Image 1 (tube, rainbow, N blue to C red):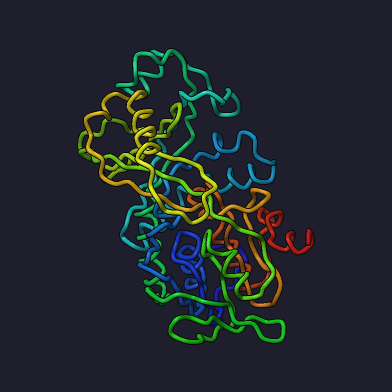
Image 2 (cartoon, one colour):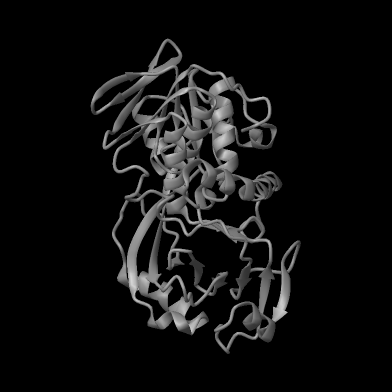
Length: 371
């Protein structure tokens, strides 16, 4: 919890979205004593097309932020620093490990350069760090402080922790509209009828912008950016790789349950969930070219997700328009990395109407100012 957060709230809070942002916020609010209800149109945690379920799980505050604005890089760095305690707290509260591991990341792709926490290594050192790396790789970069988490186990752990703290889940129920009256949000209209609430948190990922629009509420134009991925099935007791690899044309993320996730495309394709065999095979081939041992592993799953992107590439947090509404969206590629801070920021705003200082530059109100 954030220092100074109200821990005796009795607010009725509706949360729209069962991904990592919604579940993390639900947990924090339930810990504060709020009466929390999470709405999700499908299974919970959210799965089909959801960015959380389709994420690789890289916690790369340095490699992801090479060209990022200063404020976003600082947010990423603070989020990464929060992850060890966040992961341990989730496991204590839920009995589920979110798969957090400080593995470091090896970069064999072009487009990166040595910098703070990123050093150049020769081919021999690269193969010492990642045994089995292709012999054709003669140089790489090593980022020792990068880490990973398993987004699926993270979501499951957050759901269990939120429920243990008192949150209520309503799955297979679609929120059709946010209800507003006289300048204040009063609840949500679902497929099961109107549900009253003192406050609504909109954490519906790439669907957040559309829900604001149909509710006739102002807000950022959040759009989906499609990412196709696949996973390979390895023996957890004999993993072919245990570190993150940023290869030319793909990234490789091993997880403790034996999945080796390979991703990802980045496509402006709306909500088209069609999978391209050609694109997925290109990802697999790029991974195999970097780590030949992957060639013998069967494909476990082919899937895609929709990352929530804003026009300026920054998260959209806090309030915009009527009282009683909090946004928690726009994380784009970094929803898992940002998870500890997004949960705290959205919970603080829902309870006290303010964002923590590190999140204020991402206030959703900037879109109202721009308009």
